[in-house]
Figure 1 (cartoon, one colour):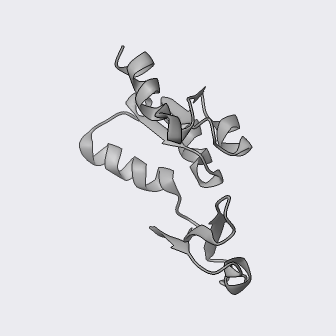
Figure 2 (figure 1 turned 90 degrees about the vertical axis):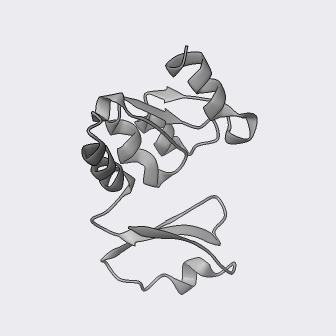
Length: 115
C-alpha cells in the first residue's frame, strides 16, 4: 500500500534518498506526494478488490488525475481522466471528464454509465 504525504516546501529534498524500493510521485504542489513500494500501484490494490468481489476489470469505472493513475486508467473498462489531470493520465485514459471542482465525476456518470 501507500501513503499520501503533505510536508514542507523542501519535501522533495527530504525524500530524495528513500531508496529504490519506494516510489515517490509528486502532485502539482511539490510539498505533496504519494509514497508506495515500487512493486505496488493503484491497479494492484484495485485488482485485488475486483477479484474478491467477482467484478470483471472491464466492468470497472476508475477516475484519476495523476501519473500514479496511469496503469489503472489504461486497464479498466472505463478509465476516465479528470479534465484537470496531468498529460500522462489523460493519455492512459479512454475517456476524459470535466474538472474535479466542476462535478466532473458526477456529470460523467450521469451522461454515460448511468444513462
